[in-house]
Length: 467
Image 1: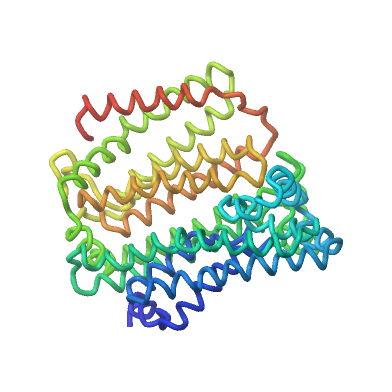
Image 2 (image 1 turned 90 degrees about the vertical axis):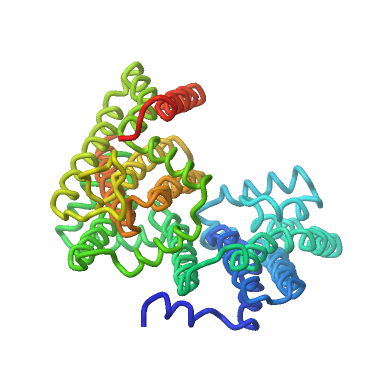
């Protein structure tokens, strides 16, 4: 039995799915926990499954409503009865800024903050807790809780529900594709949860970081390595970068061995290729061709040229050299990987005649460009805001990678291999950058530089042929 078939059989029953939606709504509204859980992703996925199973929409909205009310109510009760203890417990003891942010929001809007706060991501799990700690009237809180949940539940449930309810009717999907779509959805949700959890754990205040530090102290070799890393840079061991390097390198090695041993496309490659063939349309083809030009050599040069010139002008030579090393390194590794593995493309238009498929240079280069940009921007931001930059980078990379499937010049496994290779290069460059302190890159005229990049990329798409 394939992995996709196994995941499809694990799809919850209607009753269990309703309980799962209620639990997600409760957890997302629960004090502190909601900050660590990607509730929007989870509830969209669960609601999509509910729509696909044609569970009554009223029941789906009702359980989301109940879960949200109970979650906010439990947070309020916790703050109301455990006012002093809450601030001394993890994670608030290590993140007092979360409490301060919620308190500012509550002072600004008063009783209405409970209503408004449910729709404001960064403060949503904190406002009910703070309302309880400040002894807001329970009756006023109850009315605000119920009124906001009445609007919140359909707003969060409907998009996923409608997607799951209509996609099978709108698309004439090949037989067997449904199981792979469910497998992909489960994988994406799992990755989102893991990413959100690790993001909190690998910083200096995270438990995983403290556990690694404790373990390093017990072994002389690891202790010397840990101290050497912490004395450099900003005094914090770049655990996230090391973890990314180890996981990406291990996954790349295993994935590449699987591709080499297969001697042709994987089963998932054929399934996904059938799916994109079913989705084919002139608009998607045009979008794919446009992104193909944006992600080739000319497009990448047009994209990074204004930023590179600004770095040189401002004498940020170290940053310029690190970015240049990342781009040069990924170009070299792509060339070597294609030559060593020698995998043919599913389709090769005239401008790609003679070129090979694995790994995808578009995917790997997009990961390096977006990943390094996110890393440099994140260095200029507080820890609590950095995850938004990385999610933005992911949203830029995914369409670029999927465009290669739209125009049929890569298998899905080529994209996975390219993305993993790009992550390895990002981790290496980031580790090299973190070896010593650097002056901040801010202030930066990012608006002007972004506009210049868009103009150059637009000119490249309009006037130069694909390569």
